[in-house]
Image 1 (cartoon, rainbow, N blue to C red):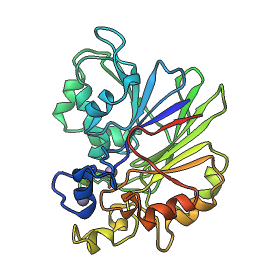
Image 2: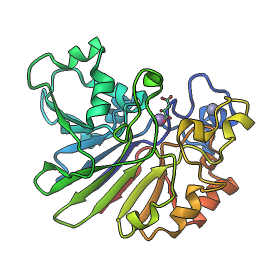
Image 3: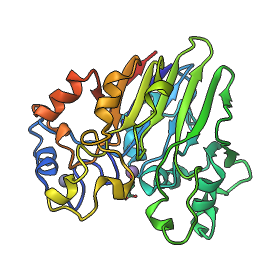
Image 4: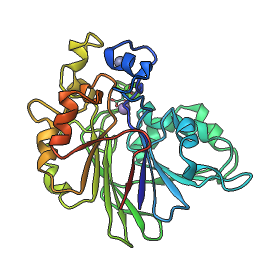
Amino acid sequence: MRVRVLGSAAGGGVPQWNCGCANCQAARSGEGTVRPRTQDSLAFSSSGENWHLINASPDLLRQIEATPALWPRGPRHSPIRSVTLTNGDLDHALGLFSLRESWPLTLYATASVRRGLEDRNIIFRTLRRFPEQVTWRELTLGQPVELEPGLTLEARPMPGKLPVHLMGVADAGPEDNVALWIREARTGGRVVYAGATSTATGIAEELRGVDCVFFDGTFWSSDELVRLGLSKARAEDMAHVPLTGEGGSLEVLRRVLAGRKIYTHINNSNPMLVEDSPEHRAVLDAGCEIAFDGMEVVL
Ligand code: MLT
Ligand code: MN
Ligand code: ZN
């Protein structure tokens, strides 16, 4: 199985259009200490022919062009077979509308994520230009689905939150935010994607023995946005467990017996993005990695 990081940033990307923080400025300067990053999405493939996406970021068209494996093999063609949504956040879903030029796709999502996107949202009609354009397949928590022979995916609930645009208008539930467990039968390879979670507690045992885990790397510390004067929100208000502090994910992942442990969905405020920073070094010293756009994992 090949996994390719299409985008490794949280919502907004690095740099973010309206952000002049030190990291965003460094990313704009091109000096190399902070790499520019697009918004969170992964592609994976067992055969190398058919590809499956985890989330469809607003940067998807750029990400496809940066990834020859995702280019058409004919006059009208795409190797992209499916998109799985892990929640309804717009940094994970807006890219669907960039895939509207009539190519059949299968979309996997829990019932609540699908409802949150489709209900009262007339622009979804643009993905119904012909009957087979989009086939929704419902993800039931804990039940593996077969993406293609020998390649399965299972959604498991992760504590998170409703998308910002549904807060106050929809009831929250366990289907709003999921982690994905991907398994390739031929190699026995297992990949986990947990790009958004409000807690790392209790996950170590579940992750034992997986070949590669992608984990929520949004914030270094709980008060990072507040301290930088960027926002009043703390990490917990946004349902992202920070790497450090009480219950931080870095101490948990350090002890997880998994092949590779990779932080992704990294917010532009996170100091670990600075490649010569002590925070960057601390992540590597804990046996973890920091995703970047174009990173490839081969199992
Ligand atoms: C998140 O990861 O918390 C969301 O992407 C935030 C947002 O939608 O702006
Ligand atoms: Mn996000
Ligand atoms: Zn910034």
